Structures are given as structure tokens and as C-alpha cells.
Length: 367
Image 1 (cartoon, rainbow, N blue to C red):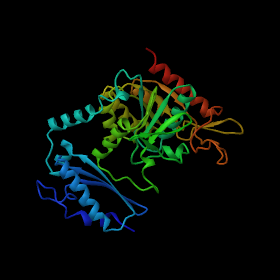
Image 2: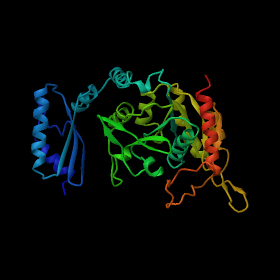
Image 3: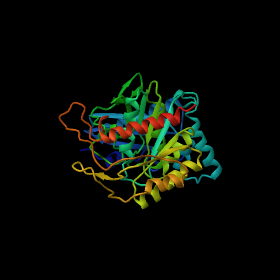
Image 4: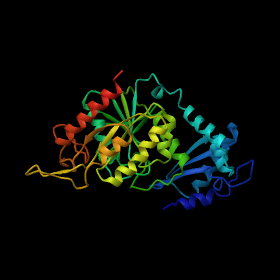
């Protein structure tokens, strides 16, 4: 079995021409993945001459062949300003960093999907902490919007903690046609997730810049077709991905998810504050796990307390648009449309999600 360390070792002596330093040390060889005796990696090149690129790819391929893989896949990409600064350890000034971030966003400006007049409504689903059911809200809102006749896309932007494919019961990955990635579609929702590219539940160990690159690729390199809504399931908190979304999609709106618990609502306020500080409209707060309803008598037990969602909405000067009960979909694995986390339209939660979708449509299409 080939290891990542073996790949790094056999490529370590390859130097970057201008500095003589190892490509490995300069972090110019990245995303090394070994699966089923196949090697895949990315190479960042600083010398843009065609001859250098061809020689670089040939040399890497020749070295990796010595490890005996069945297949070798090498992706080459020209270095950005950020890559150069990262490689040579230069500290970025605040001004340089601001220009770079603006440049990253500008790289998407000409893409039809994100133009101001594209007609696509971008909605990020955010939370302050994990475990509040943010992804469950995302997938069910997406399906509810599709049930109401909307053309819906969904990006699983929680790149470290991707869960959307499993939640929707997706077993097939995307395909590539004419160099365009086609998203997987189910329940009328087109889906793209890091989970399609990481097998066997392996962890994603990336630095911030790579997260932004993946998000840009999901926006620019995927054949979404005509969309009315594109939902983004953000990671918990206010980290790199959330910041990238705010920079790439200034027109994006947000829904904040919390539980009734005071601490969850307190932490979720940070995600809401970030949206406000970056001029993103908050559509409202969804309080998940609001209560447990007895199936026999109908009595409600407020397991996680009460009032967190309302207080959060008040803090963020928005409205509490839904309170969802604690529970799981009663989907049986034998059913042809089985999915672990999708509530059917005729269930209590399914009807609430339809109401959320109606509210979202009203708020987004009010003009």
C-alpha cells in the first residue's frame, strides 16, 4: 500500500528553479490522495513557460511510477499571489491581504451564476456551533423549495464536516461532461459536496486558502444550469469558509439555526453578527429541536428549554420564522426514495418546512 509519506519522500528532492528549495517544503505539491493504489495530487507552478510545465509533469509522473501505482493523476495550476507569499514565507500586509481577497472574489465576477442580474437567490444556512441541526434544516428547506416548483441547487460548504450526501441518501457521485462537473440531483435538488470526492469517511486536512479554492470551484466549475435558489450549508462558526462566502457572494442572504438552549442561541449570535457586519440580510432564525411531542398523547416536553430562538431573533433584529420539533424522519430503508434526513411533505415537520419555504420565497421575491 502506497503511503502519502512515500509520495512526499520520492518527490522531495525536486526543487523550485528560482529558489532551489524543495517543492514539498514550499507547499507547491498539495492535495495528495492515495486510494485503491491510485495517486492523485496537485502541483502549483511559478514558472509559467509551457516547456517547464511539461517537464515538471513528466518528471513527477516518472518518479511516482517507481512506487508502482495503477494510475497517476496530476493537476497543474499556476501560482496565485497568495501561493507565492505562502511558499516563500512572506508576511502579507493588511493592504496586500485586502487586495488579494478582492482578487479572489473578482475571479468569479464574470461567471453568470453570481452576477447581480442572474436571478439566483443565494441563501447561506449558518449556526454558531455544531449539533444544532443546521444541515438538516438546509436539506429539508432545499427539498421544500423544490416541492414548490423552484429550481434549487445546494452546496455542502461544510468542507470539514460534510454530511449532505449521506443525509439525502445519495450513493452516486457527480460526472464530468465536456470538462464541466454535473451535480447530483435528488428530490429536485442539484447537490455538490466535498463528500463526493472523499471516500471512506477520511478527514479533510486543509488550510484556509484551499477551502476558499474549493468553494470557488463549486461556484464556477459546476454546471448548475438554470437556478432560482442556491443554498449553502456553512460550517459552524465564523471561520474561513463563512468569510469566503461573504466576500464572494455579497448578495447572499442568511438563515441562522439554533436550538432553544440559551448557550446555543448566545453562540449563534456571533454568526448573525458576522452577517450584519458584512451587510448580508438575515432572513430569519429557525429554532430546531424546540420540543418533543409525544406520539401517543400529543403533550410537548421542552427538552432543551425555551426561548432561545426568540431571543436570538430579537438580538439580530429579525424574526423567528419557525420552531421545529425534536425527531427523525420515519423513512424505511426499503422504500425506493429512502433518505435518512428528509421529511416527507405530509409529516408534521415536512409541513413546517413547506411553511419556511413559503416565507423564504416571500422575502426573496418580494420585489
